[in-house]
Image (tube, rainbow, N blue to C red; front, side):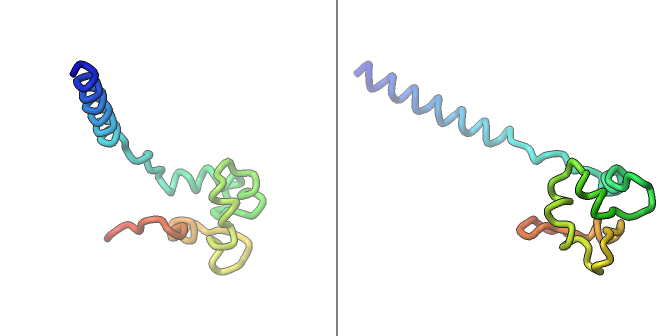
Length: 94
């Protein structure tokens, strides 16, 4: 009988812990695309070159450069940068 009570208490505690953890999870903070673009555009010419992308800390820029460069001019413009959504990411409404 005591073992049964202990097991039930452990199960209830476990479920409560998992439930509270699930409620505490938050989405990562979103970065301002304008600020991020300025940071990536290290020479300040208003576009991100392949060289700037390769030196960036952001893996996404390196991995998706050709997808982001929609006009294939070997630069990512601010418009191309802001319009890019990786495949599988949710699109913003509005």
